Image 1 (cartoon, protein in one colour):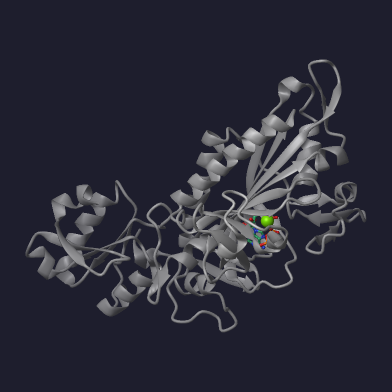
Image 2 (image 1 turned 60 degrees about the horizontal axis):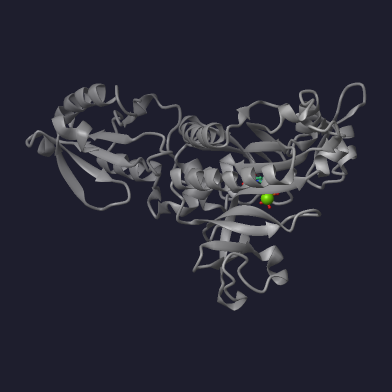
Length: 410
Ligand code: ATP
Ligand code: MG
């Protein structure tokens, strides 16, 4: 893509009231636009990153978890929330039909997915069922000061599983841990992200969160450094040792973290609310066992950024970067050669081509801010060697690479 044609430009300063580093960087680089606290538009490069994260998640949902993608509405009937007892949630956005019927904007989709599955579930042969969606959620968050980490409107991947018995649920729940681990590794924050024991609500002892360690986090976790699992601060009082390896509580390390995902055993809480039952092999009617599995897609983008940035800007992992190469010509002669390189490379990989007539300093500063994994500089000096200068965003050393070898080098 020609940078001169890119809709957005980088800006020197983020809005003054924007405190979060992730939002400051995303706004300055032109990836998002702030509409109000907790509400952002996604601009071309921000959307590209988000779509890449979505694809990584989708792959794990489809291939590892064998789930079917669906898309449910954001408008929900309040009656359904009365049935589950969630009509008094403080984060609910409420609205009404012209007829006066009360609605809420979806904050999660149990109240929709359970009645939906009820229409398609008849006998034990239909189970298990796994459905997921990637869709906007609405929560009237009291404070939205953490940029894309806490939106009032935000993108979530939510999966719901339905099982005939506890055993079948458990094996799927374990598989979901694996899928989640794969996702966080693939997006580049595997090392910083820990599975975390959290409160299981009314029915289960535990649920599990996936927490990414960074000072930008709003949560505290207690990390067991010997086995790599953590315990959420909210349940730590009931715990005297690591539930995984038994290490003493005093040896756990308290760290700030971002909850990027949450998997939750629901038992029959929601199925009972809507009489979601099935007939088993013996002809007996039974309640369906459920699980739900969320990932905040926008929050994940913010978490990656909070982990991967420096004083100059963002450092995108290759798997989610908006482009792979940032091609920068210096001088008229180099521009001609860069045109050729762009045409050749651009067929195979994603290149942002800085064809703007601005100073070299400005080009470099923007390149560091945008954080594309490889910077390719073409100048008279490099052309004398038939080469381009390649620099990885997170490294300081540059390397001359012959133009014809560029493709295979990276
Ligand atoms: P939190 O405790 O941070 O408010 P939660 O536990 O209420 O989050 P869940 O209902 O578990 O959130 O939602 C599933 C996932 O959606 C979370 O793990 C998180 O990644 C993401 N998420 C939740 N709230 C927000 C939000 N306001 N903005 C962006 N992502 C969010
Ligand atoms: Mg949660």
